[in-house]
Length: 112
Length: 116
Image (cartoon, rainbow over all chains, first blue to last red; front, top):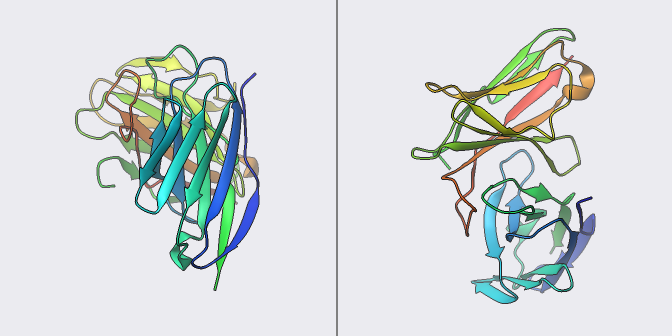
């Protein structure tokens, strides 16, 4: 089967750093995505990894290890507006499709 | 994201009625995906369509749900005889085809269905 796991909830302090982990087991792998979703809104794209290593984009970084089926999203210099759900999603299968398999999402609460 | 247009944004239906949700993909995109998000849960894949074809409907409930993407016009997700458990947010996404690399999958704003 296909399974993507991430913690349900996390809490962090404004200005701090937080790491949200994601492990996946899928038949095939064609990329891993992280999305941010505020309550009542659509997911917005944060990052994409298809090769092992770290991708950095401003305050957000994402890491992938394909051999371990593992990724994390790193958020630095946390701001109150970063309070949201963070969704890990994988494109599995043999490729040539944009079908995303999502984890259940991690709700991050940033406290002053 | 103004590219993927979904309507209605909010829909209220009584049990037993039909719900029709529409999605116009981003210009130039020929691939459409529908996802359902139940309260406090992640997004679940429902169906993947290209123009006039259903490519993968492995996430669609076997009864009451159907989807189409006609040659002309938007993609439509149709739910017949709605029940309270159908209350959810339904998101549409589109892509240009092939295996997406980076930020090439675009989500619509979602349609929130409430069944009373």
